[in-house]
Length: 171
Image (cartoon, rainbow, N blue to C red; front, side):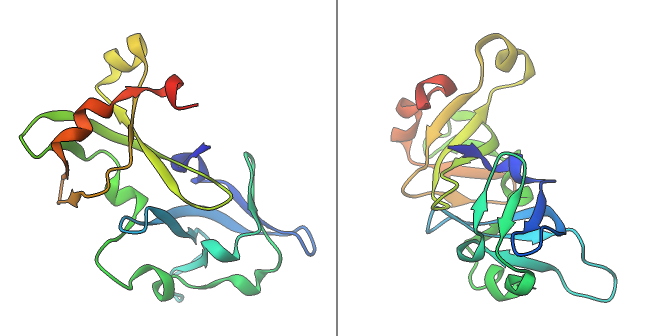
């Protein structure tokens, strides 16, 4: 499993001839499907719309690069990122406070953990502040079945508070 934030800045390489076609600028997340929907490339300019690659068109995601067969898979990002209101850019979700339905703050969404072969999001990586993170490590929370994403908060069912565990336990 891999952290989604680790994708940001990775080069996107074409297998066919080994050229770099861009870097990962942003990751598109589908909350309802609990999956990575695609990536946005950083090579866009003033005269083009955001360009991206749908997850199903990624050949593989490695530790040091994202691989695609050919650059023909690049498309306008709005084609796969704006189909409904449960699709978010990763940057829109990070640093939101996670709160249960009864008002208990669990922590801050620091990252998401996903399966790079399927794109399935498995868990939230939760921070409880820099000092706590350094002393005890970050916590992980299995992805909630139901959640509400607000402007600066994510509201999860009350039962999720009992499912918090250390990051090491997830491996």
